[in-house]
Length: 106
View 1 (spheres, one colour):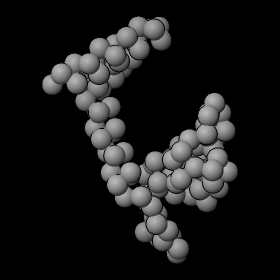
View 2 (cartoon, helix red, strand yellow):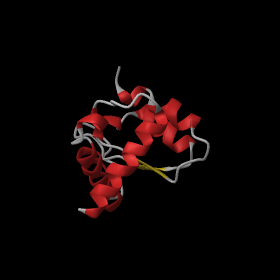
View 3 (cartoon, rainbow, N blue to C red):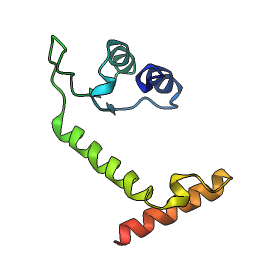
View 4 (cartoon, rainbow, N blue to C red):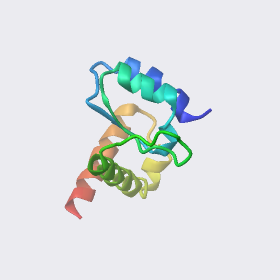
């Protein structure tokens, strides 16, 4: 199942409304855009090339998305984190904190 079909449910389950939803072109569907608009959030999703109405989006905010993806890529270099070796959520979160601190020290 595509991730974009689940995004409206995830947005509805958030405890607070987001200011912006940043996603890649795969999330450029009418249902996702309607769900983001229903949350009164800014959609920072570049339009697909085949979309007739090419809408504008904040390119600077979208560029920051790449920083987050690269950070998680660096975290996943640790085999135990990538494969979720830790069984409890507390231990997994502690490992994530440790890896984030080590990455920050690099």
